[in-house]
Image (cartoon, rainbow, N blue to C red; front, side, top):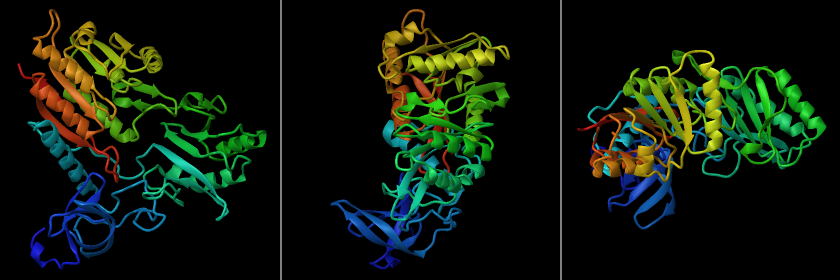
Length: 459
């Protein structure tokens, strides 16, 4: 911020935005102030809500000099006011500026945590800013004082459920279901014992998973069926306990799944399975990852943290042989089912799946799984430290007889901090260069940073 000396003492000049989408300012004594709702290059008044020795937490009171990147939120439930929905954090910031901020977060993490600077910063992968969220978890609450049922996300920084009547980040037809769902739950015998509805959209089906703490009455089951008939494409699933207890209310109708048309791949899934929230970006991400990895017909590829085969099966349309590795036998069994379904429809390279404890990898296990020219790595938020460490250890030991490290690794990350940590290991201890990295705007209007990085063997 220029001319900081011209800012009155009772106001704050905002210099940056943190990972929680809070404006960052500094007082004259150097104390940092995090301001909810403020944007870089703004001069604001703020109310301090929490004080510590080195920092303060505050909320925005008034903007005296507005950022050129501030925009009017599209959703009426977004804001700092009491009861505001906490599902989004950055609707007040222009979408292009959101992406630029995430790119800066990625580069800062790579350098400050991993001492890695990519040779090429790739153009961000972007898609629709609205209606993109095909997965969500709506809380349900019967509020007796208001004589109503609430269905939605939690209020901003609160355990209470926000009173939302529309949502612009889920598909339009799902937003249109919010009020009918409130009426449905309000009419049920189980009005007090249904705390959650999980959403999972497929290409043809909108699955709603009703978490119920007590068995549902015959009348309630009939109401669920009537709701599905009234709203074509809705499919009810019931969850009496943990995720493993989820079952379809009524068999028949289209299967829940999504497609990857570029590769001729169909991906059936259960509504509680992990799949990407944003199917539009997922298709581009899969295509980009394979383009960067560039698997050849004479190459073997390993897909680490393969899930249901989101990358594995497209890889099987390009490579000579593919090995998909995941952390649980149950998930591997599901991957094999998806492989069988797609292999019956089109030729695929020989593909196998195996279960490993991916957080306790050892060099010996890498050797046992065999050499592969290329790796695709797509870990959860915890990252792939054990995998990177095992690869680094083999490099330090000059490898093993008959085994060679992959020439190229494409790493898809949902946490820039763990990506940076693992990148540091790959570059400084495992003999790789970081040739490219960039952000993937999987979650517009949130502070979540998805990214992709490419590593080439230096020797």
